[in-house]
Length: 334
Ligand SMILES: [Zn+2]
Image (tube, rainbow, N blue to C red; front, top):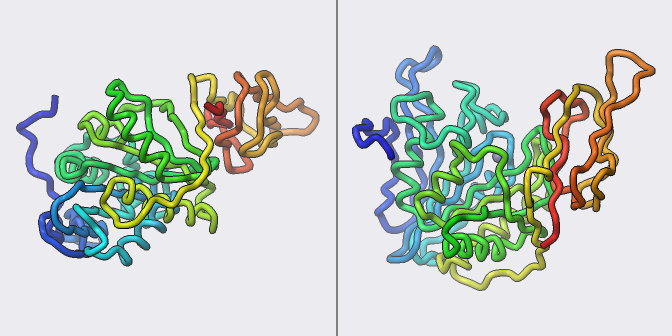
């Protein structure tokens, strides 16, 4: 249970979430530091409200080096008109704004990983204070939540929209309906390595319909991945009855991450040679990648073998790998 004696959030919003029309403003978090004694972190926010209807909470930049979400959401924030909306859309293109400004996964201020910081704390670090504001102020306003991710600098993914298997099957079915509507080339029934502290879990435990994405990676976006993100967010809003117009139909292939055998991790550091590319079929026992020791020549590389049959859905991105890095993720067609 949450501690009900928690102090109020230090974050104040310059937009009124109850007001009709389009508002652009900031979530202002006081942050006193060397270069600004009474300074603040200014997190951009847009709210578009028109009458009664459901609320969608749209977020990007949960990790600061993932760009499809911020591209789609900065674009949507500048173009969405109140008359095209029934209900309310709250847009935060860069949730962990300090990380987004630095181009890093975690915050340069406190090393906070936003997606491991929930439920957050109003008297914690900057990252924990932002998480607490989402936990206690923004998530309770929402009916549906779309949180954009991609692989960041260290992973690359097949472009997919995803939701989790949930104990509440009605909630799960609504989330998979929105995944379908998003219309990414791939759709995933997602398994988490470590769900504690995730925004996903916080939203799902509140009964919200939560969908997420992994739309590429490598610390950049492509024309294709940006297009998928922009089409996807409009489709989700249309499917939820918030945005006028019909969902653009698209063919998607459903994938499932059945158990932890889908993940392979490096047991040594070195130079990684991929033997399969994203989307390739891999058989159990086949070598997905080789890791060459780089201290000297003449040493056998370490083989990283697939622990199941599947499609390569994600891979390590940089050319050098460290012990413990995720090398590959396999998924199976459902
Ligand atoms: Zn992410």
